[in-house]
Length: 270
Image 1 (spheres, rainbow, N blue to C red):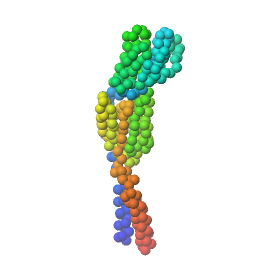
Image 2: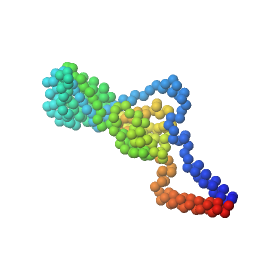
Image 3: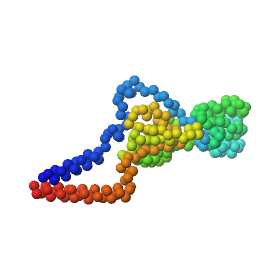
Image 4: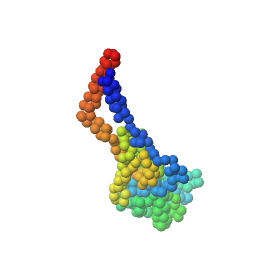
C-alpha cells in the first residue's frame, strides 16, 4: 500500500515538474494601468536607406517628352533595371527604375549623376532626387517616389518556422515578424530574444523581453532592413538532440512502464 502510494506521488511530482509557469510564456504581463492613459510612441519607425539597398525610383512630370532623357541609357544607373513607361489618366508620363545604393551611399541617375541617399527615409530621398533633377535643369516640376524593394529580416532559433521575412511595408514591428514565423515555439524563451542591427557602420545588439511592456519603447520594437532576430531555446531544447538525452528518454519510458506494472500488481493484490 505504501509503495503504491509512493509511486503515485512520484508520478504526480514528475507531471508537475513538466508544467510550465504562465509567467514564462504570457506576453506583456504589466497591469492594465500601464495603458490607462495611453502610451506615447517615442521612437521613429521609418526605415532609412543603407548601402546595398535596392530602391525603386519613379519619376512623374506633366511633359512626357522631358522624361525621355531618363530612358536613353539606363545602364548609367547603379543597377540599371527599368520598368515600362506609363501615361496616367491626366496625360502625364511616369518612368520607373530600379537602383542599388552604393557602398558610398549614393545612386547614379541618368543625366543627373550621383545623388546621396544613405541615411534618408524614402520620402527624404525622393525630395533630394527632385531637387537634383531641378538643379540639373532637366524638369521644372518633377514628382519622385522612392520605395525600398529588398527589405527583409532573418529570424533564427526557437520559432515555429525560422525564415527570412520579406517586409511588406516600412512600418513593421518585431511582433509582426515573429507572427510571420508562426510565433515563438514552446521551447523558446520569450524573455531572451536578441536583435542584431547594423547602424552607421557598427553592429549593435538589443535584448528583448516580450513578457514586459517596456518592449514598446525599445529601439528594437520597430524592425529595420537586414535585422537578425534570434530566439534563445530553453535548456531542455539545448540537450534534446544529444545522445544522453536520447538514452535518458528511452530509460524514462522503460521506467514508466515498470512503474505502471508495479502499480498494477499492487492494485491486484489489494
